[in-house]
Length: 473
Image 1: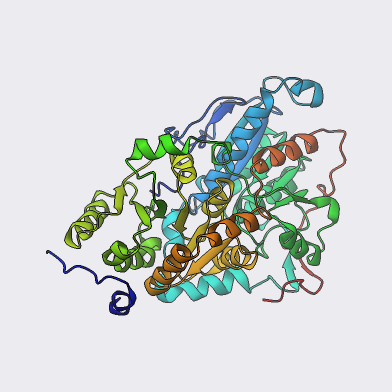
Image 2 (image 1 turned 180 degrees about the vertical axis):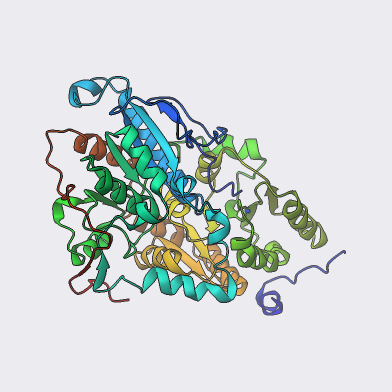
């Protein structure tokens, strides 16, 4: 970072010596929840679902995710919360007379049903450094062109027979899946049990990977038209595509008192506040992000128009590390926060967010009306997110600490670029996405509605040949 110091208007002083808070805690996790029950930012994960617990068949909507990162959980909880909110609206049961008045919403982690149970978070964190290109290869190029996956019973037969047994007992009204493994396992269970409940697939990034069960998802709820165009090339009919946006909790799109929030967190009212989301449930995926922030911190004093807030999450060691750096370099325009349970309010009080290009965190920024700098080298779905967001001008990007510094300095010199990013972000902003997905689910749960997929067929493996992709990769 020596070149950065040479380019600043004032030299850096001589040294005197991310559980991501960006991701909200779980609202409903692997437990039965009466529709309309309130969750909150301080809600704690509940015990795993009891597979042998008594159930009333035909009265439950399942929302199934996989604990591979926190975004899929966040999306599932947002949809469950939206189903509960809709239930409290006047005339709900008149609009949806086929829904039992005592229906329940159950949020499940599909990995807990595996014959071989593994930690999805830790598995995902293996694709770091030298192994990351393999993740990009498998996510982005295998089966994402013309040879496509339709769906099949292999998922239930090989690793998730417990989920098939559970579905046979619950006989769900409908199932929403926010992860590719969950969606495929639901298709498998439906084929094996012969049930006719609808499946709503909700990819939580700005692209759909080729292993989603394309032929047996009744509706794909996607972020924008570009994602819909990808599905059309995969022979997904128009009636099975809904452009809803990605689901987030409604508090991210709500109005918050900016001045009050800044006062609460001890932030200045007369500077642009930049929020860096460096906390993480597992720190390994954030190694490069944190390393870039470490390089940037000694030079924050030269960005005089900004005040920086670094979220370190539930990591005392990392918190002390950042505080020590700030003290060592006498940085006075930096606030270090650990775990924060008012992230929607804090985002709304800031002028800019530095974050990774995860699907849910970027969508939360969009809905909170705060521009982003996407930091780090992106692979897999994060690369798709980065390309989508920067392609429409809704976000800035930086791979290294030097690029991050130059981007911040450019924004400081041209503050209008922030407003331009906000305007461009309106193309992707759908604050009511969770409710729109919930409404689609409730409509399809009507037995009188003919499902667009063939629920009575069985395939162990079903591949097919698609049209020429709309977006060449």
